[in-house]
Length: 138
Picture (cartoon, helix red, strand yellow):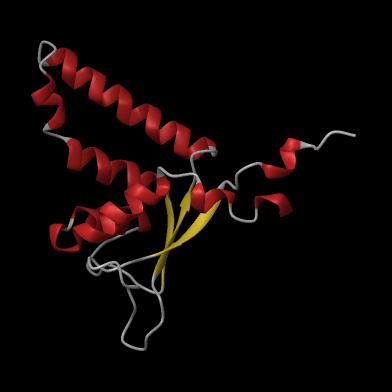
């Protein structure tokens, strides 16, 4: 009997341990690793967020008469919006002074002094690696 490849489906969500800008684990004052839980590329939430960002990019490109530079001006804004939509939780940390979770996610990802978190999570959430670990058990 052939192997059932569906046993290797990617997980819909994963927890990503955060890293400092120097690639070391990002920890709290007690040494506990901080993380985020996110929807992955195989999830409906991720696909919807990606489609919405792509629609916005296409609209900006069209409004700019096809000039790519105008579309690229909103790259950070697009990253923040995408990550805010696919993030489920911050684990072991928060971003103070915000309302609901989505606002907190957006504020944290938009903070340029924490850009290393935004860049790390953005890279991880666009990679299948975190979502295929242990997928045989799913």
